[in-house]
Image 1 (cartoon, one colour):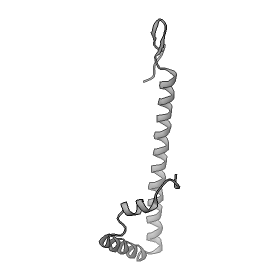
Image 2 (cartoon, helix red, strand yellow):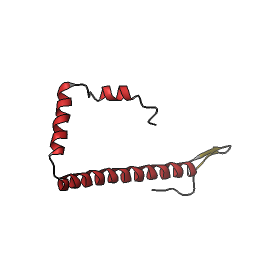
Image 3 (cartoon, rainbow, N blue to C red):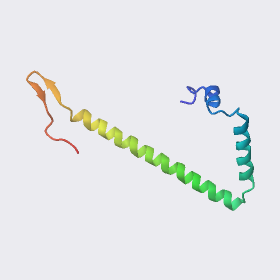
Image 4 (spheres, one colour):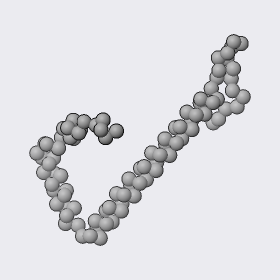
Length: 92
């Protein structure tokens, strides 16, 4: 997936070359450098916790989506010679 990404296009889309935005990023980096080690570790812990939770929720969503797709596949109506055959049971 990374090899399919045009990094030049991605960077230009992010406007990293825009002077005011670059200055803003430099200000944020300077502010991060002024944090104590304890403050940095607290910040990193919060960020990693947020990213981990996001990944867990994404995986749960993909799992549920795959289960629903599988159920739709196995319990779908089938068109036959005598008309449409409906499944015996359905899920909610």
